[in-house]
Every structure is written in C-alpha cells, then in structure tokens.
Image 1 (tube, rainbow over the protein chains, first blue to last red):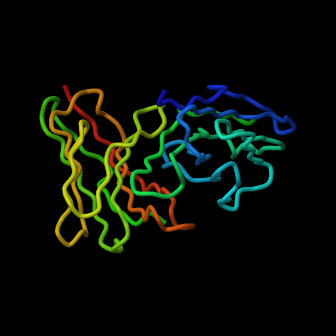
Image 2 (tube, rainbow over the protein chains, first blue to last red):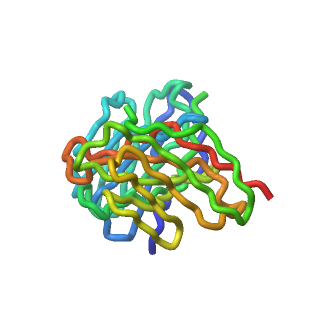
Length: 115
Length: 113
C-alpha cells in the first residue's frame, strides 16, 4: 500500500465552526507533513511530525492545531478560521524526516472553503 | 524562499521528449536536486532526485551539469497524462531544520496531441 488518504475531500465551514481534517498512511512512514496550497500557488509547508512528535511549525496561526495520535494518523484541527484560509490542504508522509532516499508521498488533499 | 528558477510554462508534442530546465546556481555541496510534479487537482508526486550523477528511473531521466548549477528533467516520450506542473527543488536531506521541501513556482508542461 503506497497511498496516503485524506478525508474529507471537500469541506465547507463557517468562521465559528470547529472541524478536523484527517490523513492516514500504512506505509510504515515515521514522518508526516501538512501543506497548504492556495489556488495557482505552490504548496507551502505548515507542520512536520517525526516519530509522532511535532518537529517543525512554520509559524502557523494557532487556529490550526495539528495532532498525531499514532504513526499512521495525522489530524489537523480547525477552529475560528478566516475566509483567507480557504485552500487545498495536503498531507504527505516519508520514511523518515531525513535521508537521501526520502521522497514524500502526498495525499489528494482536502479542498477547504471558509465562509 | 525557493532556490531554483524554472520557466513558467512549456509545450511539448505527444510522443516527443519533454526537456524541463531548472537553474539552481546557489546550490550547496550537500544539496540534492529533487523533481516533483502535480497533476491538476491531485497531490504532488515524486519523480526523481540526484546529487551530481545523471539518474534514470521508470518515469524520467535527470541530467545535472558538471558544475551542478543547473539540471534538466527529461520525459522521454511525453503523453497527455504528463500534463502537470513540474517542480524542481534543491534540498539537503540531512540538513536538520533545513531539510524541507520548498516548492518554487514550477513549470506548467502542456502536452499537445
């Protein structure tokens, strides 16, 4: 299984809602990532987990809260988002955070719209 | 900031080779060149990477100049399904906090029938 799955595919939420994005992989990877991609822009790194511990937070606002309950799962909890947070949220995983043969496998993303 | 420069767009005829250039004049000795692509409405997909030798896999070939300041990704027989944004990224895979994929603006390759 070389797949990263993300749910939901699409999400519409109001600015007062609380929602969560989910990501799952069963490749035995120990590093997992969240990226944000605005329309017609490249992906931007948000968070990196390594061995279930947060290792990189790219100065992301606290209304985004990541969680890694186990080595296969990664969540992104959303609360009090703004319309400008509307974007494609991509999850990725890799065997480890470091190493030469360490390509990242990406999921299909969750398309988030904040009203 | 991304450390690579790519043309914003390129066209290629179906069945012909697609040659995608990338400039990385400030690349350091520890940094590898990685290529990913993103087909519309999908997540990015890893293609290939290399340090200084040319590399080939089932998807593509990577040619890195001897001074390592530029590289070319070659898709030998482009198909319509190869239409995507191609990202060239330099990265030190052992660089600790700097070990991140930083995507530039990429090249939109349009394969024409």
